[in-house]
Image (tube, rainbow, N blue to C red):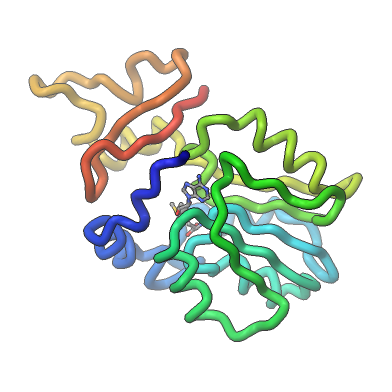
Length: 192
Ligand SMILES: C[S@@+](CC[C@H](N)C(=O)[O-])C[C@H]1O[C@@H](n2cnc3c(N)ncnc32)[C@H](O)[C@@H]1O
């Protein structure tokens, strides 16, 4: 069972104030680069994995996607996504990417922003997505980069003496990492 920090009231209150949640895609620093990687969306069936408030799900429909499925572990995030969406071609579901099973050969594009680093069993997820995509389908995703985090939050990854413990140390040892972000002990999975 995945950790669900986004349903922690304190976490959600803080997270909801971030520019990417208040301003949407214009507040997401990676968006211009990611948008350039996307295939033509018109007529495509899209799944948005870890959809959050649904900003990308709605954008995909604006680009002509035939339908979009947004999935997220958090009731808070899905409730906000539903409240912000008036579009019968977008469906939101609460689901855990650790166990999610999508129907075979159903999607043209699987998209995910800043979510896969919360998933422990990435191999299972990747195999499931491969089956869920049609031949020539696309998977486009972002994860948090450990060096990016080191640069933006220098207080992270230090021990009590201020020495860096993560992300730079033990970079090549993949696996669980804990960090404090609005709440203590946020679980993420480091991969090289
Ligand atoms: C950093 S937010 C990104 C939200 C959105 N994709 C965006 O770019 O604004 C990460 C999202 O992943 C969701 N999430 C975390 N672990 C998950 C899991 N195991 N299964 C499904 N969603 C998960 C969280 O609830 C949260 O909405």
